[in-house]
Length: 102
Image 1: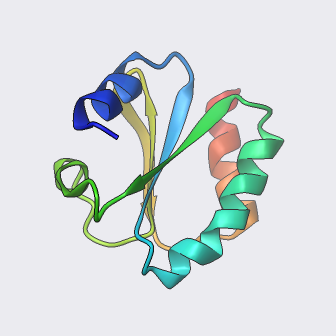
Image 2 (image 1 turned 45 degrees about the vertical axis):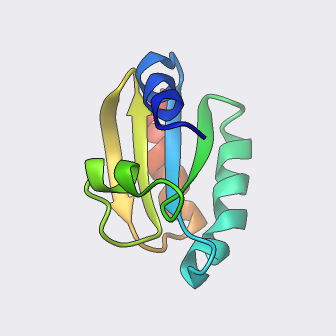
């Protein structure tokens, strides 16, 4: 994915986008995958999920100050609405996201 495309996407999207900063070698990232999928599915498309591999996109990780993974940032029209690093339970993530979909 081109850097420009990622930037455009998070700036122009009318929907909120949850960006999952991850790497293939990261165990906790793998553990979070089903949690993310379930939470996003339950939100009925109100929030989109975008996975960003930090090994392939180190600039994006740097730009957003991502120092450890997994790390999640919720964007809407280029603004950061919410961010959190580390493992989260489905309940915690779900409650956090529901606060942004009204």
